[in-house]
Amino acid sequence: MMNIVLIHPYITVREKNIYLSEPLGIVCLASYLIHVFKEKVKIDVLDLYALGSGIPIAQDDFYVLGKNDETFMREELEKLSPDLIGITCNFTAYALDALEVANKVKNIFPRVPIVLGGAHATIEAEKIMKDARSVDYVVRGEGEIILTNLIKFLMGEVLINDIQGLTFRDSKGVVVSNPDRELIKDLDILPIPDRSFIDMEFYKESNKKCVWYVRKEPVATIMTSRGCPYNCIFCSTKVVWGKIWRPRGIEKVFEEIEMLVSKYGIREIVINDDQFFTKRDRIDKFCEYFIKRKLDLTFAVDAGVSIWLVDKALLKKMREAGFYSIRFPIETGNETTLKFIRKPVDLHKSKILIKEANQLGFWTSANFIIGFPYETKQQIEETICYAFSTKLDYASFLVAKPQAGSDLYEIFKKEGLLDRAIVRASHFYRSDYDTATMKSEELNFILEKVSRKWFIHKMKFFLNPVNILKYLLPKLKSRDDWRYFLKIFRVLFEHKVKPLLIKVQ
Image (cartoon, rainbow, N blue to C red; front, side, top):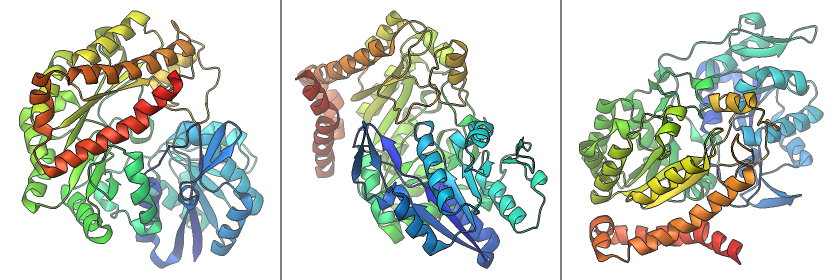
């Protein structure tokens, strides 16, 4: 029997109130390996993030969330006696954490092979293999079948040069990248993710803080599809999933949700697809199923609702099925910037849809991004003015991030704006890079100013009784609605308003 340990690393952050949802990538890998190899392997997940119990550890100018102590790792790994160790390296901002874990683990077990996988590992595979001697293999892209074949190689069943999607060093130490592996055509060959590999009680708590606007608790996240057919300039997930949208069978999705409800008592599902709304009839079936089931269950879509894929009729059906909030990823209020980022958003239709969603009782929000490499201050002002001209309940103002693997990253690189390829603990509410027209300090000042201004704007908006009647009362039709309204008010104050007031002082 081969003992395989999959590690979810700790993360290093700038603020304490950062939370992660379930590491579904690792759970999917573990579930598939058991499905394929059965008793030939023993799979364990060492979740260093969850084992820290969400208690931040101060370290220099950062905080560590999770267990980063090498002695602790040694004790845990010695219990598991691994023959292969896999580490997820998904987000560029946390890539240094994953590489630190690899170094610590290699000190403990110098002869045990270590494999990295995930979005960042995929994008930077050859660089990782050249720079990080503790890493023996990198799985690029969709990991289930590639990792399966690597295990078969270690068992002596296949040749390493035949494993598509693998990067490794040959016998002379030369980095070799085998050809890419094609994506899995039928996602239903994958089993439903077995959450017994992780501490679901911990993630029930973490999820409701990670997705702070949730209506019901406890919360779980799912993925009903992989990939996105669109080509937004700032997106890096297409490097892993391609520009092909692949859905799971809707019956399998229903089975997973029913399991989450019955086994874990889940009352809200957050859908983490890159693009949930690609196929209209699939969304219709999803809504119709849960309208009939009448479960005490609500739904949210974390990536938001693409304006060009929905209309009032669909929104009405979603509301009946248990969807209660809508985030519109509008991104910009400037037509030139829309073309640059390749986002097929109709700004006029967006305003209409926001009004209709409000009148149907949805809580509405939208993302607005500033700081694209050629964007001018005037274009940023147009985006801000557009946001304030809508009837949104909440607007998130973010900064453009050159994520490794995105076209935006290549533009920043071409323009000489990437003095640091990896900024540790980088996030979307802070600029770390200058653009061709502005300094990062200017962008941060604009973000802080507009965020403060938004709350003043909404307070004035609801001083008008007509606006209360048209845009607030449709959301407040039951006792649960009022409870949720008070929760949102409290959470927004704690997360958004209070930090701004403290900065002003």
